[in-house]
Length: 114
Image (cartoon, rainbow, N blue to C red; front, side, top):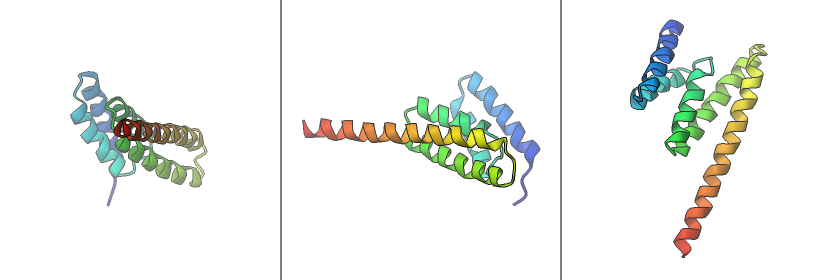
């Protein structure tokens, strides 16, 4: 599949516009398309992870962060050292999201026992 980087950049810009007007559904659709195509920039991963976190959709937040880590590991392997700090940041965010998911599961388990 041939990737059109200009189209991907346009999607990111349009997604940001949708976010500014509160149209998160449309923004998500555009960002998800770029994630599906393994966009080699942090924008759609950062924005989706944040949107999903704000919507308390931790499973999708984790999924997007895991994909970002895969993409940025590839970027770093390609000798693009600028990807390394972003890779560490995505890994840190993933750890926090996984911790939150674990804590929520524990709380739900406790409330079922009551």
